[in-house]
Length: 100
Image 1 (cartoon, rainbow, N blue to C red):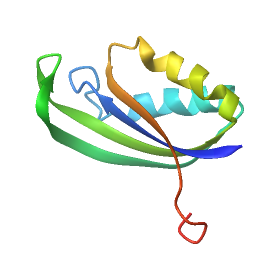
Image 2 (tube, rainbow, N blue to C red):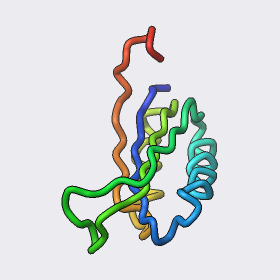
Image 3 (cartoon, rainbow, N blue to C red):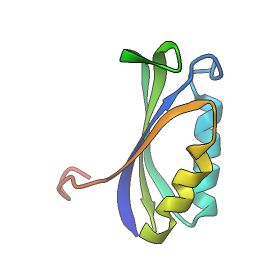
């Protein structure tokens, strides 16, 4: 298991609750793939530097998860065609152990 940081940018038109319901679906997906969520942080609504699909702002969520590296692509694929997600960035968490 490796630790990953995942940042989602959500379409605020589809997530009136600030993405709370979406967090439940991410939790279910991670558990289905055999991982676990360590942290989930709402980052709120933020303006974009450039419009994405004619929208100027989105709702950001940051997750720290543990997941088997072979399952990362399956996780990304689950959100690739989701029209309520503008972006999904999966990054390897390289923070020092003392910070984790």
